[in-house]
Image (cartoon, rainbow, N blue to C red; front, side, top):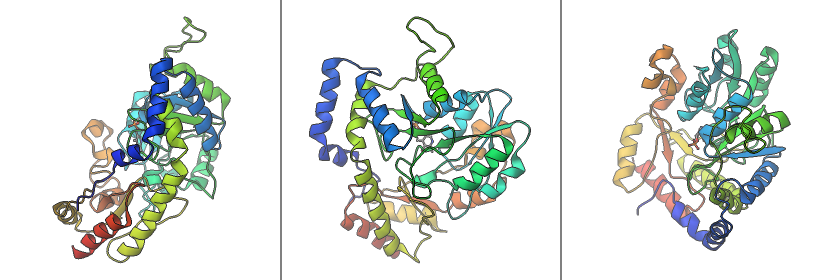
Length: 360
Ligand SMILES: *Cc1c(COP(=O)(O)O)cnc(C)c1O
């Protein structure tokens, strides 16, 4: 048996007619950039997130960059985030001219540890980007309390957490929340796409201006912006796929439940503190590299998210962090392995992966 890490083709074939029709509609109406399909997706996605506004952009990285700019983050500022995220979280901070500063994680949730945040707040700290890693919301209540006390902005990196909940509810908890629709995400486009979701009209308007060259009204550029617009075809595809997101997230959750049952006691299984949408199903084993090779030899694809914490990446050598700066992240990084996880997985596939882990 060959088990892929994710099977986008199988998903496409399950909704092929609807997708093909949606793409054809854009080919015929030629609204290739923004347009009615993107408008409609923005309305639908805002509603899905229990939020007032969604602004479609061309990647999750662009969403983070614009959300930070709209919150007036820039040169001389510091923004706190987690070192165990995709590089883009810190990169977006750097793109504004601000400096990322990192805080270690909770070993059980893999998300930023609220107890460690206050120690690294300085006069320059202006914002916190909690990352809802693997599909589980960070511990937002204490993070929001710290932000309130120190007058910091909260921008959520929800790029792995479409549909996740905190205390039973979906919604934007900070000034804004950023999503990626990279093809492999829980809600994935067929190319690059992203969105910022917010309840703040001023932030929404600023992001709309920034994503399209600061142009409004037409031919008047009131500020220098970017070309971060969402494509019409991606909006049309996302509109179709959004209707399936709850179903797909439920399927992921069922797969996680079965994995947990089969893997309990054999590896460290994920813990659910709040409604988790399992973008990634990540377990830990002290002989991770051996396990990964073994599974590969049995035809099972796995991943590591991520192999090097951001504070140890060469691009951030100038920040002065070193091995040992964040002991929990560094330890966990050596043990984590992401198992195949996608809605279309079969019970047979989950059994096969689990049996091979047991054999190892
Ligand atoms: C995917 C991802 C991003 C970046 O999104 P892109 O659409 O690839 O630019 C940022 N942060 C996290 C946590 C991600 O998983």
